View (spheres, one colour):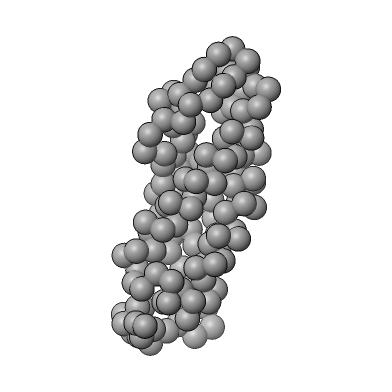
Length: 134
């Protein structure tokens, strides 16, 4: 197991949790949705911030900071896709999905938290910047 001082580049932070801001995420491939108006390919992108809530678990699960962004992006994109399918149910078109982006962001925050906790992180901030045709 990697030592915490190596992970953080110094002694582990005391008091204030280590935070990682402005992690950009996005669906690499379009997500195919079935809308009442027909099929639509959609891409979603945004950013998020996370904080370490369990430094020992974080070090054990991820090994180092370079792996953290990739892992977080994977979890976020997976949960964004789940939320996109949920929000698109009964929607007529892309504009209806875009208008539901706040609802989708709240949903993603709720469903992304448990898998992030399993790697010692918590979601501090989450934003959807764009929902667009793929």
